[in-house]
Image (tube, rainbow, N blue to C red; front, side):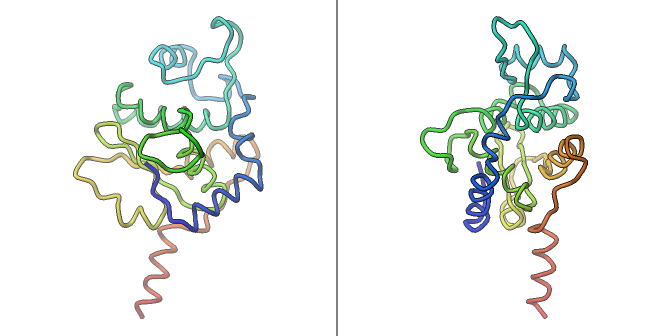
Length: 194
């Protein structure tokens, strides 16, 4: 589920259109060598239906999009914490399931969530992905992160900014700046409090 304030959602939508990010995110131009995956790991993820295999008859080179690079990096990070493949189904849905209608937040995870969250990072917003012990996926902007990231279940928090910047640095050797962050909210709150 995506938790993002209306103004940041509008900013993300504007960034998607202005920079043509939908095409950039989904253009398959990277190979397995551009990922931290081994061929064995890729085959295992594919077998468990956690990786899209667009090869004809399973032959040829696998090609990945930028969004898939982000997804793969998150999966590998979560596996370091012992997250099982069954718990990653909602993550896969939030990256690749076609939405029922427009790319808007809904109760059913779909690719719109990840595209808006990734676009927000490109727009300078600090975004956090959380996964609970049942595999439920939550995306938070700074404001929602401070309010609603408390849960009765254990949460693993993944900074989308860190994941995306790691990949971006390999491609263009620069990092995406963060303009809207939790730190900025705290500073603004302290200034208002005085």
